[in-house]
Length: 107
Image (spheres, rainbow, N blue to C red):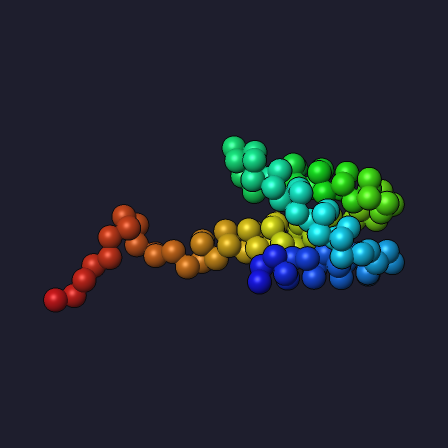
């Protein structure tokens, strides 16, 4: 489901940018960069690798460069950066308030 919603998000962003693309171009431009991002496992989340390769691939598949940049950066913001930042904020809010991490238990 995650892959399906990611691809739907990308398609909607391309459509909103005024450049709808074919499913084959969408799948190619989405799948190959994610594989490359997993190959560079020492970079968390494939930061930079996914964005750069996705933009380059979409441009080589006929999408204008400015459209590729805007769509890919918007997609990564929606699918990676916003959830990551929200997670960090929730971590600060939801962690226990005790100073040493031990919770006192009443008997």
